[in-house]
Length: 466
Image (cartoon, rainbow, N blue to C red; front, side):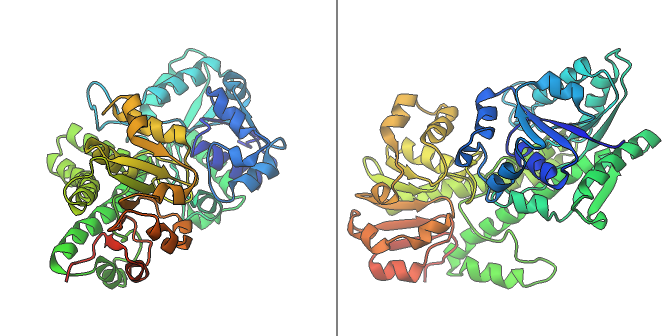
């Protein structure tokens, strides 16, 4: 099928950037991104490109080049579905908070709603592409809904998981390690696969476009995230041993990273991983394993998440212990709230858990993050239901001035590895802090020797005590 019109349902972190790049690289294809959230669509259509709902380096330029030419953002969902030949589903698949599988299984209600809407609107044959991260065999459920509508419309289901790292998503889309497309082995399924291959082939070398059956494609996404998260938890587990033995985790990571069988990536000890995918996908994998009675497999992967939660707890416990076993009434400055630099995404950010722990100890926290809004920070805390909204606002303040955040604080916690933190006037910050002045570098971005010369007492994860 020669694709001329694409619709993407979901204008979030995956849908927006992915469709923008497709529109840029395929000017012959009309791409419409739809969402029922009108404020989000308004933000995508804003003339002020700094107000895009997703912050990714380079994304604003691509939006500027394509929006209104062959890229459109709209709330007219049914119209876009009806006109499109290929429909990408890129909606949220959060972990269930209720019922069977609570806390582990993916909540597929939004996926099902999309499938039912596609089924009810479609008048001609369409290719439906799973872009959201989904459990294995979700495609069969989508196909069952689509094939039983009675509209006599034929659908082909493809799996095309994203492998984007937030902060580098645009580059990941422009120069991917690989593009994975899973589909049916039938002639119709293979034709659908070729249609999607032809789109990516406009800028991706053919040898980097892998085709599989749909189940392998779905499972490959979960497996990739599980393996990456496993590396983070593994190096964080070793960081705790380093602190007890006098070893330096940075030196250990460098030594093992030079082994060609291991490699250096994802071996940076930190306060823990966050983001929309790692924890959710591992818990999804755990649930799948348990549902098939594979308890040993489930326990193995669940330990990756347990280790990650332990690292966050250990970091906040260390702040309390270092500040003479009490932070009650003490000001702690948080530099960073996003789960990683170069993104405004806060999902599963370590900062949320560390803040919650310290607020439980009656600490007074002031947060600075260059890209995360005050409203988002309070929403993250309120979602935990640990305390009332009024208590959160009383104990935690948000500022757009990092120096004001640090002023009169007893300690500073680095929760995101923003590059700008390295450039601060740390002499000035030290002079305006309570003494002794502590820095808890949860991302290992600052210069320990420089800060200790100034007078700071500096703690970095994985640094042993001599």
